Figure 1 (cartoon, rainbow, N blue to C red):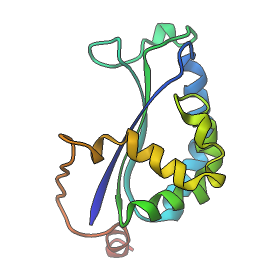
Figure 2 (cartoon, rainbow, N blue to C red; figure 1 turned 180 degrees about the horizontal axis):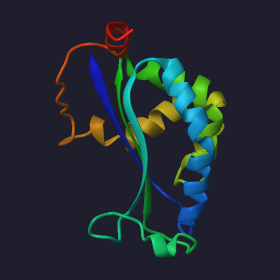
Figure 3 (cartoon, rainbow, N blue to C red; figure 1 turned 90 degrees about the horizontal axis):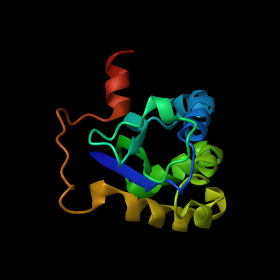
Length: 154
């Protein structure tokens, strides 16, 4: 069964968007490798949002300007149990999350994530819009797992 994760983390005040963008860009190869290795993630994306903009898009002209209105989002669809999914991420991408959490409100309290797995899970649950009304629904076009889909094409 596919489950959603819509993790929205408010960014610390006066953070420059460019710092987050650079951290994500330098981490992308590790993120891609981990997602492939974990084998339960259908889709995943990181997004930087600006709550001061009607369309939530950060201004490309202000990437090096401190902001107090940013939100870092991690949006995924995955197979299986939430706790197992988070443990997989901690084991494969703990260092990446430690870096990203240094930019977000409450992130320091759960870093390093490898030493704070229950607290990290609680942090994600608190900030996961998919686990709170009215955002609990997910349409799934197919019942297959990632592994069944990959097997069908190999």
